Amino acid sequence: MAYSSTGKLPDEHASKLGHLSVIQSQWVQSLIEDFEDNQSRETDYDMSLWHDFDVGQLEKLKYIWAVDGSFVSVKTNPTTGKEVAFIKTALISVDKKNLEKIDKKNPHPLLLQDIMAGSALFHATVLPLKNVKTSLGSNYDAIRHIIYDSMRVDEDGQYFQTLKWLSYKKWEDSKGCSPKFDCPHCSNEIPGLPYDSSKGECPHCHKEVLLTDMIGFHLDMEEDSASEKIVSSYMLLMEHLMLFTIVRLMWHHTDKSVFSDTLFIKDGPLTLRSQYAKFVPLIRDFIEYTKRVQRPIHIIGQEKSGVFHDHLTVLSKYVSPKQLGETPTVAVLTHEYVRKEVYRTGDLANPYGSRTNWGEKVYVKLEPDTSLVLNIPTGKYNENPQFPKQDDLVGLERIMATLPDLISRRHEGALFPVELANGVASMSSYPSAKILQRFIESK
Ligand SMILES: [Zn+2]
Image (tube, rainbow, N blue to C red; front, side, top):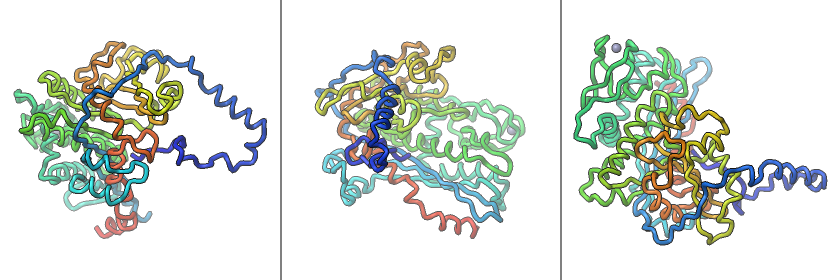
């Protein structure tokens, strides 16, 4: 997802209201002032979680990887009603030495090419959504098999290996089965596929099931059409699989230090919902394991829109640093704070994020115009409303030491590696819709 503009950076000052002569009216000016004034006051907010975070003496992380994705659905002319979706995800690594050479405001395209050379991986696939028939079977089965094949073909099956690594918890010695799932043929529950298998058989209807069926995409499909939800879910799953491919490779690398010297960045929250939430306990389990064996992981998600982003936008003006050069500040949001201050609901019955989140929420303000909503994992979940505390976040100190070097000047609160990943994964690098349309019609 691209960064949105808030208009606060000097170069962003588009004259959104300036051209209206009515703005010169004292009445209108007073209205605007009152409106802004009434919107929020510092005393409306609980600021007790904020505190200074001096990063001066802390060791920076040496390697950086970031993942992002995008998708587009394409309809052909109305008579056929054919609709397909193209999905693209990208994983990039950034060399910190090259990154330092770059002017963050006006990055030179050739230098950008340099830091990207040989360091970008992308994955692309196409899913039929409506009225696309193949000679092999229904739309439903076509999607199931395209997903299975897409994950197995790319990068010599490394992403599929990562799916196995997560599903069977391959960081451990135990040889357990995959998470349970509903059969795509008969809907009965399959207790899980045996350790390391790519395919299996449903014990109820005895039809073939794929490891990718365990993910549960078929729950977002009908026999002859699929909802757009499957497209965003596939993108999100692939972002996870790509990022965890590099996590996995580094974890098993002979040089044990590389893993803990790396910052892994995911665009968006560290969240998986509905049937896809079955990966949440697996990922938490791995992160807890890295803590146990004292090889900490440094992984963040950045939220660039949504309720936390909006909340921080209001709060950040009351928080230091208010001038360049002042110490950065951090607020680690407890579950109670999220419920009471962010969502403003009294509902504390269900522990916040227990099923869906593998990272906790953290607000960071690095510079007067740079505040970020981060997600950082803790490993095991704790349902205490006062959880998490700063010490519960894995690797917060080195993450904080590294962030100031990654600030982009092109968008407010933007991180350079995420912008780069966004560039590789974005729509603009798709063939034009016209070409895609011709492609579908020719099939
Ligand atoms: Zn079955």
